[in-house]
Amino acid sequence: MNKERIVIVAPGRGSYVRENTGALNKYKSSIKDQLSLIDSKRESSNQITITELDKQGFKSNVHMVGENASPLIYACSLADFYSIDKDKYEVVAVTGNSMGWYTSLSLAKSLNDEDSFNLIQSMGSMMKEKLIGGQIIYPIIDEDWKINEEKRKFLNKQIKKYKAYVSINLGGYVVIGGDSNSLNLLHSSLPKNDKYPFQIPFNGAFHTPLMNLISSKVNLLSNSLDFKKPKIPIVDGRGKIWSPFSTDINRLSNYTMKHQVNKTYDFSTAIEVSLKEFCPDKIVLLGPGYNLGGAIAQIIIKNNWLDIKSKDDFKKFQNKNPFLLSMGLIDQRKKLC
Image 1 (tube, rainbow, N blue to C red):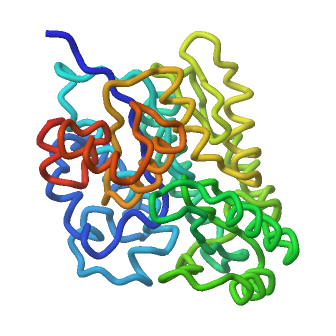
Image 2: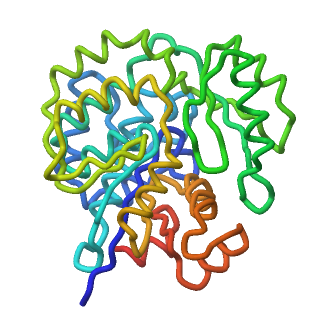
């Protein structure tokens, strides 16, 4: 039987929400050793284990703060990845959004289990004492999920005017980072669109120059990590492919610990490159949750991939023979496990 070729997408911060409570414990059997390592490392630092955290009733000021959210999301994504039936599916590339880059390094074996956890736990805890800036998200699409150029240009103008930064290009949305003053002014200047502009809770100004303020901590962490060439191609937040044979591990480390920390993370380009360079039969979005699915769909539409040109086209395609499979949706998960 020929295997279907899949590209894996790892989600970032904000993907573990109230509805995902208990997801890790439900699917943890595929990562017993990794979860044991994560829990023991957390215990040794006098932190609640990830297993217990997932069992607790959801509290935003507990489950969404960086030092808890990052390893919790990582563990959920690991459990999903190792649940996929590798006899039916061949993973041809991995990519991710924001924190999902670190998960991708783990899935591709560029970092071993211990280093992967140390990186994710450390980066998630960098602003434990005090957040540096914040993030808001704003849409630049029309009702058909197509990019509206006028909206995009207007938003970019406002971002520049109030000295904020594009943090993440996220399909039909832009995540904007900046200090509190810049974001407050920007927030007030943008036309209301449903719940947007929306301030993302417990997030700092990730992927912006404001992160230079933690660069010394990041450099110290960098020296403790043993990067390897990936076993599976990884697509980064610029759309660059890191392949098993040609990867320069010093450059991979430098990108991970410097560039992607304080420069825009272009998730849209990462997905576009993954589509065009690997031509997968399916894209698989790991959990927790599935809130990144809309952004991926918008990128598919932008590129007219599989002749999908609108929101309606995408929905019809998904109903007939889904191209995007989200592990957070039970019916779609069953197709993969």
